[in-house]
Amino acid sequence: MPRTIIIGLDDSAESRAAAEWAAREAKLRGLPLRLIEVREPLPEPVARAPFLGAETGRQRNGSGAAGASSADGRGTTTEEAAAGLRLRHPGVEVTAEQVTGRPHEVLAKAAEDAELIVLGSRGLSGFAGFLVGSVGLAVVARAERPVVLVRAGEQAADEHEPDPTGIPSAATRYRPVLLGVDVDRPDDAVIRFAFAEAARRGTGLRVLHGWNLPPYYVHGLPADPEVYRAVADQQAATLAKTLSPWRAEFEDVDVVEESFGGSPSIRLIEASREASLVVVGRRVRRNPFGIRIGPIAHAVLHHSAAPVAVVAHD
Image (cartoon, rainbow, N blue to C red; front, side, top):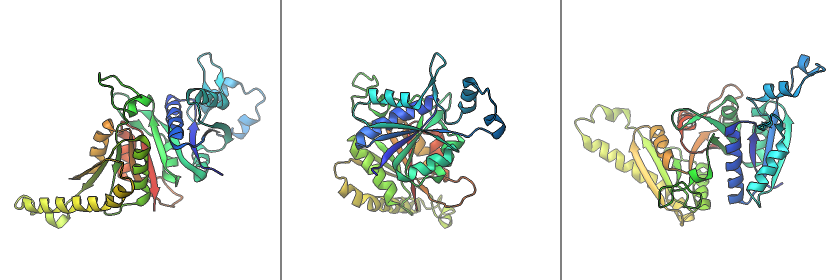
């Protein structure tokens, strides 16, 4: 079975933005797009009720994985959503299905055979960022394939540089892909994903690596700034060595490396304003209890101004 790009569909603005992003990604990759609408099963007393109206169904599913609602109140079916994507993205093969179950379980299971899975994430009002819902966090924490979170309002032009007059345009060069790297535990899957996304877009890759001084250096720092510079040089050299084989493999990708002292979360969030996609890693923890995605991925997911790809790794 060929791999697909999966979009978890519901009736929200963020889900619609995610579907459009997924269709653009499917075209870049030459892969089919699979829309999945997950409906949670009705509680037993409700399921037995003889007069459950359409409005009740819409109210139950409004915040989960439900069919979209049109302006006249009629429910937009998953197949109608698929037809719209086919119309707006000619050449992309789009299929649609409805599944009953718990959304995070269904989507994480479906992701096993997918190239990646795309979900919507509600934008925080007042400033750029995400408010990742419980379903999104659960899928990110459980899926072992890359998961992309897309905020409401995301448009194709947001991934591109403005035109010469400063007007947003989808016809200009893509903004760079942004990658956060831990050189102490680099993972090939995360780095390859970022390089490949930059190559598909014909754009550059900006790599950020944050580090902290070893505890035994900190007390001597004010008296000996050379210690800081020595550690900074060592970390920069390690980053360059980590990326060297990937530069050779993706020689057409222009890479900018930035190694700095301090937390990478803040720098990644700030740099996301100029990125087409942010890529971070998540260490796989096969623990059935709780949701853990790591502090850096968690911070970036909640505050990034660009779509975020979370790539699981061992």
